[in-house]
Amino acid sequence: MSTLKKNTIDIITLGCSKNLVDSEQLITQLRANGYEVTHDAEKLEGDIVVINTCGFIGDAKEESINMILECCQAKEEGQLSKVFVMGCLSERYLKELGEEIPQVDKFYGKFNWKELVSDLGKTYREELKLERQITTPSHYAYLKISEGCNRHCSYCAIPIITGKHQSRPMEEIVEEVRGLVAKGVKEFQVIAQELTYYGVDLYQKQMLPELVERISDIPGVEWIRLHYAYPAHFPEDLLRVMRERDNVCKYLDIALQHISDPVLEKMRRHVTSEQTYRLIEKMRSEVPGIHLRTTLMVGHPGEGEKEFAELLDFVKWARFDRMGAFAYSEEEGTYSAEHYEDDIPQEVKEHRLDLLMALQQDISEDLSQQKVGQTLKVIIDRIEGDYYIGRTEFDSPEVDPEVLISVSEGELEIGNFYQVRITASDAFDLYATVL
Image (spheres, rainbow, N blue to C red):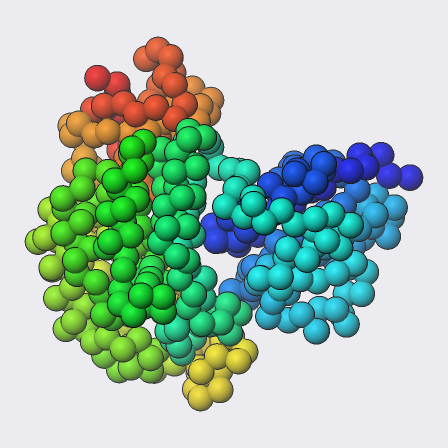
């Protein structure tokens, strides 16, 4: 017999921060309807579980499937009464999953999860639609400004899953920020599948610079950090906003994917090598000190040794402050899967990935070393062992380096800002002393 609590629901979020926002909204609705809710608990506590899945690439899909099967097993053993699944994987494979895993009580897509509330016999509370139960440390939150993507890059399944770009009205976003600031949120990670397209559908022009200015004007907003920009048709007025506004972090996450023109063309990126070089130069000249995070891909069809060498030369030139990379994997339904042959052997892809990441590690270590002796503002996220763990404006949670400050320095407040001097660096993190 189950020893788990009735009227308690566990929510498990897999995948990206955009999924996390959906989970946080669902938690608010469930709690408003009298449920106790845990999120990503060490072990399941309730008799109902909701799995918010990712369906972006093979590894993420596998993780989601394994979690569903694990929970279904627990249900068959009497440890759970209901298993619900939502998110990107079930949006993409709704029919197939229903047939393959009938033990799941119901699959929801990415956008109809509100039906889950009524399927539990409860009422979705429209007046709470901007309310979220923050699952991150209380001083920062993710702010989703749109859903969907109108770019159709060859390798990417996101438009298949999320559909066309849909911007949220600016007033609604501003209202949500005000509400979060009132709850103590100081730092906002602005996210979307593609930030730079924001506003085109609602206002017939790119409105990201104006939106960031309006968020920046709200008292209590200390840091705004921008994630997932696109290089083609980049709204250059954003650079002015970043330069002029102290609370807009000099940080931009812009996925460039590649630099070789033949590969960019095959990827359907609508940007050239020359335009990419020029854009990076412009960003660095207009926003002195800007830190750029990018994502690159190796092994896309059409990437020969020459094109890969070009990518390595680009990374040496660009010296990105932060970089992630992954090997191409064919995703069904994408342009690549239907028009190109995935003809680069997996071991070649892995070798290229290793070379690229080794190069970037050397660059990252060098750039971190250059920070030693500098005075920087950090926010304290948590305490871990003998250290307070903080971040600078150049570091996004979960993905970027952290700043470690010895607890022997005295008591620091989680969620507060401090001026620190960087005293040392290693391959991944910085060490500092409070001034």
